Amino acid sequence: QAMLASAEGPAQTAPTYDAAAAQRAADYSAANEDVNYAEGRIDPNFQIGYDNLLGQYNSGINKLLGDKSRAERDYGIQTDRAKSGRQDTVARINQGISNQFSGVKRLLGSRGAGSSSAAQIAAPYAVGALGNEQRQGVQRTYGMNMQDIDTKRGDYLQDWEVKRGETETWKNNQTKALEAKRAEQRVKIAQQRAALNPENAAQYRSSIRDLMTQIDNLGRTDSYVAPTAAYKAPELTAYGYQPAGGPAEGGDTSAAQKLGAYYTLLPEEQKDELL
Image (cartoon, rainbow, N blue to C red; front, side, top):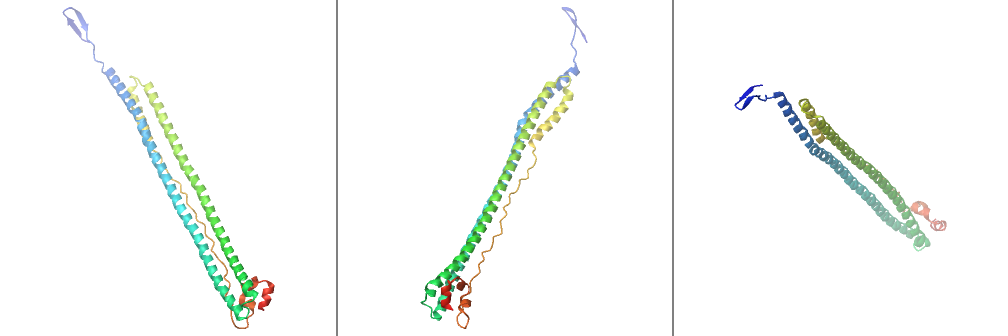
């Protein structure tokens, strides 16, 4: 301390500069600025993290929607194939029945039975019955195919909803975890602020910087691998039927052999007319 003389009184002691106290005050001020800065970074980094996970969620949903669109396309293709297969097969049956009926009439006419009840009633009935039997078989196959297609589609839609639910659950869990981390950082900031004083400011600055790193990590989220919902198309059963052979003409072959499948459908009394 220096003694200062005064013309009006005795000498006074001049205050000395306390460098250590000044440093503590500077550290305390800087530490408070660090705390304020760290606190101000919590919400922006939270938003970055939330935007990241929302982007991944949207990508996952878009992937699932793309899967669903392809599944609906494949379902439509299989449905069309099942319908067109039925229509084509029925058309072949109808054409075959028409051709065979013409052959039956020619055969009956060649045996002098063109105006008989066999030609006028029994033969059309037999041919029509055979055609109905064949068409019914095709319809049964079509029903089985459509049942398989619809079952597979139903299974797929259930699986798709499960995958959609998994994606929603991931987003909700990630959001809750991110919100919990934000709340934790706010608590730590409040604890740092409460514990801070000029005597410990210097040592606290390093811990505050560590806290800043944790706050910055709020903007980083775990990557998400979106699930896949794949449609498994069933194998369609082929539309098979046994075409009846055309009735033969000439020779000594019996009517039963010549009429083949038609003959078995004739009433017994009509069979007798042809033998």
